[in-house]
Length: 178
Image 1 (cartoon, rainbow, N blue to C red):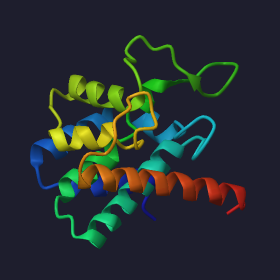
Image 2 (tube, rainbow, N blue to C red):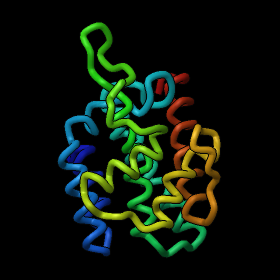
Image 3 (tube, one colour):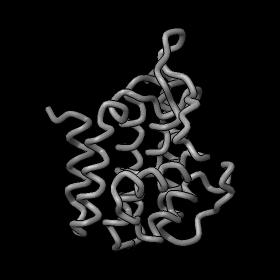
């Protein structure tokens, strides 16, 4: 049986642009422990240990299905933006003695997780994300976050739809006990 981590890596391995793929893999392996153990959120979808990894995989799968449905061919961008859309949340959280996971006062956190994720990824890897991928990540919340960025193109719309659908399905599943 393939682990969820291995599933994520398998998606990243499908990226054809070797520089993009290598940067993402380097980043993921540096922060593997947090990615595998942090929640996707503290109060909403996938708010349990490992929820960040689970949610990320759901978003990748849904984004690829939506891209296939509408004939969007830039699969590298779909995978990269879906894998990295919530990566800034690794800086959002901290383990502490009173609460297994709480919000961080990390001095490296520069703002909303979508902004932080892009900046942090680029600082750690030295790789500048393609503008379309960065814009999709900034808009994945659909303009509802402090970054106030709306999806500007098909990639942004795909990522926003996949993230929203994954979040809502995960919430509904939790309420129905499934």
